[in-house]
Structures are given as C-alpha cells and as structure tokens.
Length: 128
Image 1 (cartoon, rainbow, N blue to C red):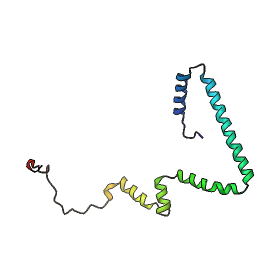
Image 2: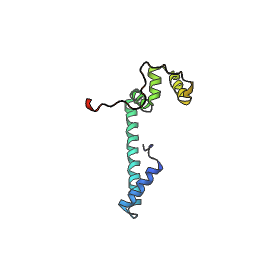
Image 3: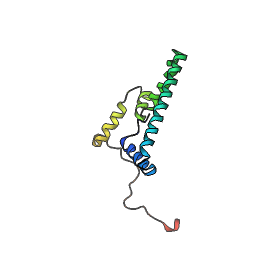
Image 4: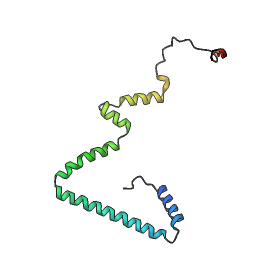
C-alpha cells in the first residue's frame, strides 16, 4: 500500500508529528494510525475473500483486465514503443544509444546549399 514511501519520508512524517502533536501524544497517534491501517487492510481482505466465494471462478475473469492495466501502468515509454509499435525489436534504441556514446562514428552531414554568415547579421535601423 505504501510501497513508494521510503525511510526519508517516514522520518519527515515522524518529525512533523512530533512538532504538531508533541512527544507525549505521538506514540498514541502512531499506535492509532497503525491499528486503523491494519483494520482497513483486514476489511479489504475480508471483502475480497467474500467476493471470491460468491462470484466463484468468474472472479478471476474480472481480475484479468485489472492485471493487464497494472502491467500497463508499470510500462515505461520505451517499453511501450518497443512492444506495441516495434513488435519487440528494440534495435532502434540500441542504435541511437551507440550513436550517443560515440558520435564520431556517425556519417558526416551533407553540405548545405545556404551560405554561411560570418559575424553578426547585418542590422538596418531604418527598416524597423
């Protein structure tokens, strides 16, 4: 449930709780919060078990789209492009990565037909 909360965030929460509640009420608040989270988790587990019993085998059919959605949520943009547009072939990304690592192996750009200006562009005060 709190998989994204690290030790740094927990420390900040404890310090903020210590400042707001004070040292005498903080342990009771932590116990109450832990108990409420445990009770909510038990309610969710009980509800899931009841649904599984009542619905039966169709429960897994309902969970399949949710599992697919969870896979999509964890997919990076590169993985999504590789899977859906490139049919799993990520050679495009490895080629770009090798060019980024060693840019001197890239072919030289073709010379442009436009003349190159030397120095700053001319400025005409009367034209503005």
